[in-house]
Length: 638
Image (cartoon, rainbow, N blue to C red; front, side, top):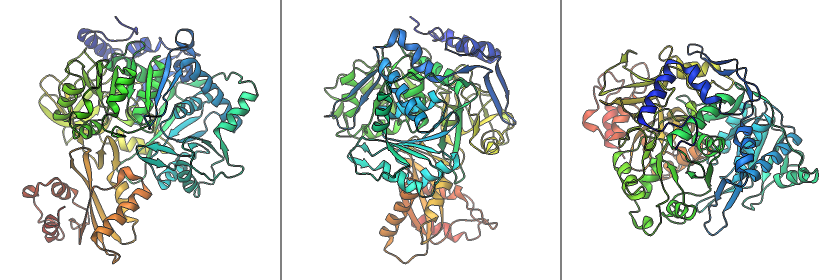
């Protein structure tokens, strides 16, 4: 039984939908979009040009995404849970928030934003823990027409300041602190450090969560609870959703690039809404009243699309988890599934691999029979982890959707559809309707054969294509649309098998995929080079059993402070302070020189071979300025 008019229910229906989406994209997406609430219909479904690039979906249409996530569900889903929140500490009580309650809280906080000067088009930075108030704040920003920019709670003050300055965000929503496993993260304190270099910030709204002592600056900082009380005193008036153009920005999300400066990917209201909903409903084959558990953080695109906007626009129940998979023990995910009778689990291969290391003890005596669909996201899943997930968590009964997509794509581009299209271990398999992948060789020629590897590009836009990089449209063009004219270049390589199934083989640029998080090598190098004793550094990736890719740093160090062990710790601390703990190098090798050509270019290809342990296959070093440095690096390999 189909629960949504646009839900694909057979392999034949998939092929039919994909063919129509390619032959008649305007007719196809116009039909899907007709099932949403629009304040004003579109005049034209699609207009695009990848040269500039310029992509416009549902031109002339007006809407507010929160009316589609909240208001339209009140008639038939008011008492259904919209959000289930499981806290970090399993002994604390979980929270159930119905659609009616979520609507009321979003309306209430929309007034708080307005009372504090937030208006349509303003940029609002959110730096919070994984609590329902983060989802409420995101939706309230969208309701008032402000552009939200969520920053992951693991980023440092310097990283936050860089993002605030780039977006010129005048408003911040944060918490006193956050819980993450056994750690307490002092969020407000980190914000205070970031704001030293951001005098343009007008207001900081602080939610009380961990009861951590914080500094509150008069005239700038206010308590969330105090501001809500003012709205309650005024009688909790309604807040009509701001009218937004389909192409108005909805949010900015910063992602690492191959240069040191993070880039703000911009997604817009109309196309993003339609595509995240469509992919959520079809990839997971979502059925009404099922409980969807995405383990990502809302600070990443996965949380935006498949914890907040995709599920809520589909009237689903979405489970929000504050903790980590191994706290207080490695059975936490399975406890949550057992407790809430979760139907869909969507997690990262890194989490699966880390839980595999604990053996089957934590899974035993946990009732996982409610599970119907398993999913993976963030990086390619290796076959061993896929099989473990399939046998021990899905018990061989749950289709696994291996989803490939990016911050820039907004939603899943390549994936099997649960139980509908074929799956294959370690393969993302087939493209979603509306998505036209192709492989190119190094010279930019399309490879039409199967059983080949190439650079993965997309031929035409899908509704949630990124529109720009905030404040720097040329950077968007250069990064994604200039390498291969008239194509979107993903930066990933892929293999296509005899059935036309795609397997992602990893990044082909200077970006690492560590635990599903993209980290630019240049960004890490810049942070390392800020350490007082460092002369120069080069960072590459290497295979890591749990994270997928680890960070290997080769560092020329001239300082005299401390032994090698202390120097490594100091460099690690520097990276943590400048970017955040997620970018800490796994290995730091101190070297006297780096392999460079005579023109001064670092030969990362050689360093990559060393880091990967391919010491017999280094290649020709005769053209280097100092070939001897390679042997020294090989001898000192960690």
